[in-house]
Amino acid sequence: MEIFINEVSLEGQFVTEVEFRDAIKVFNSIFELINQKIKDKELYKEDSNIYANYEAIKGSNFNASLNQLKDKSLKTAFINIVFNKSNPKEWRIYQMHSSEDSFDCLTIDNDYKDVCDTSLAEVAERKSQNESKEYLLINFINSSFRITHPHISSCCLITVIKNNVEDNQICIDGIDSKLALEYWLENKLNLSSLEYSLDVTEPPRDEQTLLLDTTRFQKTSRKYDGRCIYCELPTGMYWYVDNLHYGKAAHLEVFDKRGCHLGEADLQGNIDTSKKDKNKTINLS
Image (cartoon, rainbow, N blue to C red; front, side, top):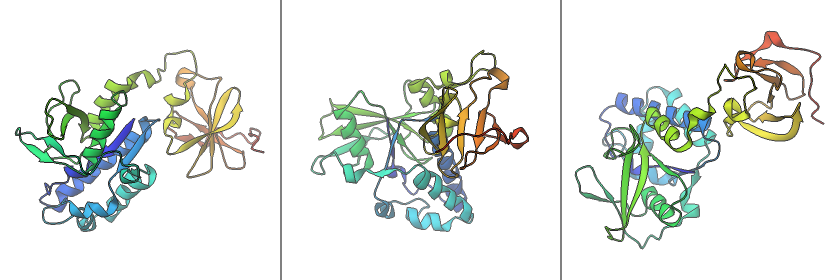
């Protein structure tokens, strides 16, 4: 699965700092869900310098608009969540489309918008070469990319035409909200099957817990009682699913970087330190 940030959806549609602030909050929530729910993914973005060519707050380019945010912690969160934690690659380093080709996008009013040499052109080219792969465009809210998707609620369908060949339309899914992403993931990945039921009589699979987040957890070669041990990258702590408990009693065991027990955690990662057992350790040597 390849996910692209659609910089072309920055169209100066935000009149005030408040509108742009709300858009950034929505964008952050989308990427939090992506990092939490999608295990196998490749994220791509435009060259950071090129964002200066796109308006966010009307009359100000994207970088200047970010600097206008009164809540500086929101700007920091955006950079950390969207760029640092998600670590998207710059697609131009791996560019597949030719800058000599023309790419036009169908707009809501049945007109065409030139999207040559943009993320839209790149993802369109990739999809034309590999239709079996899933592609998704992340749009900023209130953009002109709002042609309703015929099959997935709250999503949009972005149609790109290469070299004016109208019979060869390349259709790409797009979302601009957390709700739309949830619908899209359910349609594509059937994520409800990953939800752990408290009525079952077997422990949860790793992907039914917070261990699904590969930007946060890295699987190690170690196992305990048949379960893989994961290292939490930001903290160096170790986690594994307790293989003896299920249903309402299902939990993970958590250890510090030395292998000493810290407590038990629920499937969302909330640690109960009162369950700390000083006699419980894992061998990290």
